[in-house]
Length: 484
Image (cartoon, rainbow, N blue to C red; front, side, top):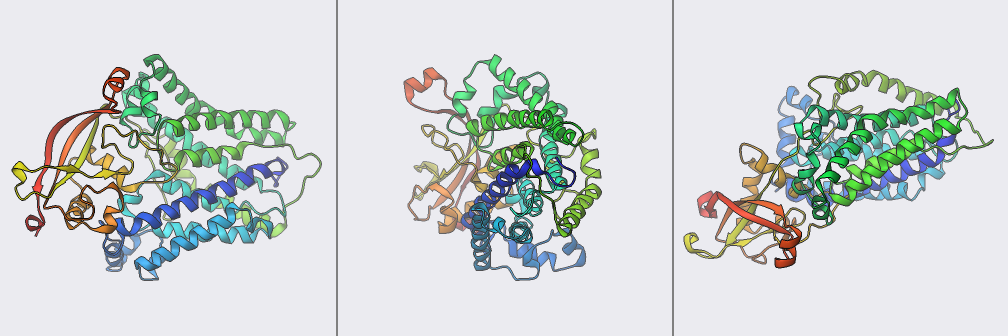
């Protein structure tokens, strides 16, 4: 570090800008493919209705976070245009083109995709209620002030990235320590690989590892999230000490965080959460710049310092939250999703219950032959190995995991069943398999199953990846006539 200029962190800036932009491209692509069926003009939860409610009163308007669609009427076509534009700008930044110009050029590009994606998240309701949405928004805002190749990155902005990484990792660690007993008695990962929202191709192999290994996983997690995050600030010592030792400590902290996140990438699908954490960890990786020190132009120093002051003002609540008895998880304390609180999996479910949606063409549901709808990511067919999906985000599949954890059936799921009865093509495109090939079923129903990974012996005998046992019929056979 060299006062106002983080001269040793040019490589870190390169990874941050290109990596965050690549995640925005994935996020806009996910929205382009799914938003209209989930939240569009004929979606399961209609965004236009939310916007109409927001326009109904000042109080309702204040409850809605900033979105472009408060000033421009929402249509599915405009949503598509926003996504395509966001993908184009994200691709340009990921390719490094705006960074070749003056610092205000990448700043404007990042602020454009940041506000464009916030416009989507603000009306995304439960389908966009995930911590990694806030993380992407906050990362994109900070990345806007990393500057261009004309000068070194500002120390203040690099430190704000460390503060973000600290809140992300330490907040997750504190949530676990304060959460379920399974994190304290080191048994959490005995269950997690099997019961996590969307297992990956290697999740079964991870689940079948010895119990002592799962205990070591939990210990490693606690070290990586409770102890190591404090070391991400070590490069600040370079202001008073020779750079080599502080930079080495910071790089070692980043290496531990990256290694644990790579294990999570291998054993599960958590959208872009792990990829974003890995990218943020590179903010701590400094490479000595030698004699080519560089300076910040005064106007850019003023801009980056103003952002730092803003964050000092906004960081009081998230700092208190980290040490609060009732710590909030994935919470935002302001309308702009800046200086948020993060965390995940304070408790781990011990068994996996799945809602299986079935349909039939038969006229008599009592003696019908039922066929399952297949989802893209969540377990269904017992012979199907879980796919690798992340960093792409399958929003419908994720919410299907949450349904059995609740005490009531969400309204969007009831609309989803109606869409199955209508053989609604946009909704069916969200699925991996329509057993009726576009033909409307006469009846649909929902059956609950308990799923567990097949043991090695069971896999050799049957070839099945999962073993499931039927629990009950949650939703009795229903037809469009019944719905009417």
